[in-house]
Amino acid sequence: MALSPRLEVRQSQGLTLTPQLMQSIRLLQLSHLELNSFVEAELLRNPLLEREDGAEPTDEAAEAPERPAELNAAEDTVDFSDRIQSADSIANGYDTEVENVFPDQSAPERLTDSTQWNERSGGDGEAADIDQFVAARPTLSDHLAAQTGLITADPAERLIAQFLIDSLSEAGYLAVELETVAEQLGAPVETIEAVLLKLQGCDPVGVFARDVRECLALQLREKDRLDPMMLRLLDNLELIAQHDLTALGRAVGADREDLLDMLAELRQLDPRPGRAFEAGPVESVVPDVFVRAGPGGEWQIELNADVLPRVLVNRIYYASVTKKTRDTAEKSFLTDCLATANWLAKSLDQRAQTILKVTAEIVKQQDGFLVHGITHLRPMTLKAVADAIEMHESTVSRVTSNKYVSTPRGLFEMKYFFTTALGSSTGEGDHSAEAVRHRIKQIIDAEQPADILSDDTIAEMLQKERGIEVARRTVAKYREGMNIPSSVIRRRQKRALVAAGR
Image 1 (cartoon, rainbow, N blue to C red):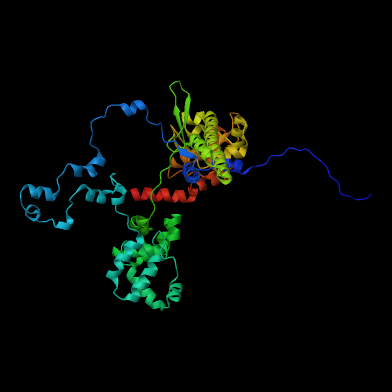
Image 2 (cartoon, rainbow, N blue to C red):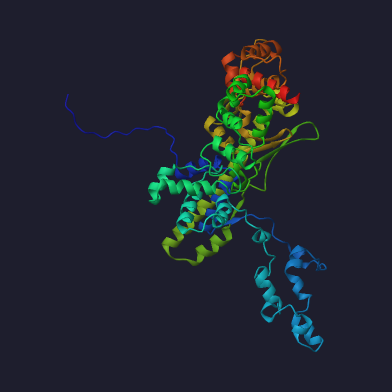
């Protein structure tokens, strides 16, 4: 059979992701902060886009009689200069010099008119931003650098001190080896150690330590409590973490009463002395959706309009500019801008509708949680929600990423409601893994020092109480995920607490 080239025509169906479709999909998983940044960039790039800030004033509002002026905070900080006479005018009224009326005020310091006051307060007639006058929080580096001049006057030692300050971690620990510092600075290790010894006396006490033991030792030395018995206690920190008081007492050579007193002293120390200077503002979580109880017992779902960007397409501007231009490149640019603006407005609306649709299904399936609490949290998967609203599972995953919902039970990430299922032996339906974790924590919190429960016992209790079929290793995994120690360590902890209470 001879091989020869030939032409064939075939018809097939396929899904092609256009760049705009891919961008619309990406918008679903953006948080409100990332979405606002994206929209701001589009507003700067596209002249046909405008942010919808509210309704335009009507003619009736424009013709309304002028209301009497009211004082506000901005007027108190900016415009009150119009109501107060300057120093020169007051002096002229008394027919004398300014120095005779205001002897403590020199001429360059006087504010002679409102322009000078505006220059100091803002310069544009608006109230000065109060954030400009808030003192910045000192960092740990700044706090320690200010003390360096009091420790040493030698320029070489100051250079070494600054290098060591820059090498500190956020907790205040020295994160480099002294040999490495000596090699980088070309100085003897003995000199580096001498400077480090001086810096370890800085405030806060405990900084420049190389491990937890040294950090606690520095603080105890400052309190004049670093005796040989306390040193032996610091040498056995692993026994302290295990709460093995019997072995710890033998290693330290102290009776139980003295040992408990020494442990109480350790609890008063700060193992992270640099955390008081941790930089970075605390960012609050803003919900994307509000879920509230309606008057008829139903759930009302509302998007947070304060964080949802809204844009308008200025078609009037597009029509006026298109009529005036004759350049092909300019017309092509305007056409692309109009298509992009229409796509963005449509994508934002679709994103909002999709979030509402997914949230409504989550609320429908988790009604028991919203009414009764975490013990009634149902197991739910992305596929279950996707099938219910006839969407793809990946779409639901993107919608629930980086989104928060405010409910009567608190503020939760949308991903919180999706948990795996644990089987039930009673036939009442599966149990949510999150609800099981919560119940395990309740059981452990209710333990008595004389009756500490093992993982096997907790698994049996869950089986008897609610018919939850859970293995011992699953209980151990959930317990470790909540940073709850084993039954052996819990027994030692609670016995130590009881002994300390006595």
